[in-house]
Image (cartoon, rainbow, N blue to C red; front, side):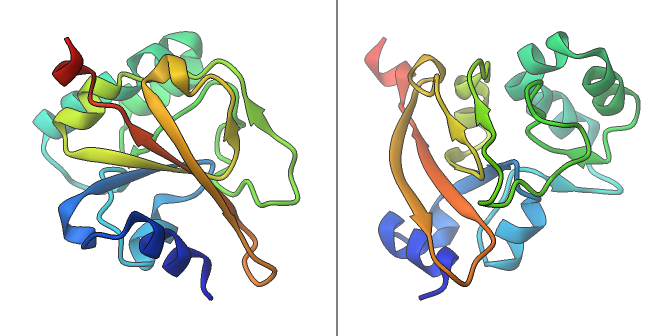
Length: 159
């Protein structure tokens, strides 16, 4: 079975009911597989959206001037930039042994934009500190990807 069909089946609800972002994986891959993405390569989108999306990755941008400048000064790539990942490498295939240890996302901002799931091509060690649940790893022989599926925890409801 196709890797993204497995993910879709696991989530078990219509794709139109939730939004995803990708880490270590070009958002176009998720989009190509029919998922509704909050991230992507956009040549033109509203400044209001860029500002709202920036809130998700603000702490990661503060860690890395190159990423901050890339997003703030251009912003065509509305991606989940991660300080620990190589800038410009959107293809962390399953043969790579990369792990994220200190991710710092604003999951409230992610949820406010409708985000619910993160498709990560690499393991996120500190997912709990980011108010995420680790759901499952998806992998098969045919796909170059390994997808770690994370789901946001609704922290506003618990407050």
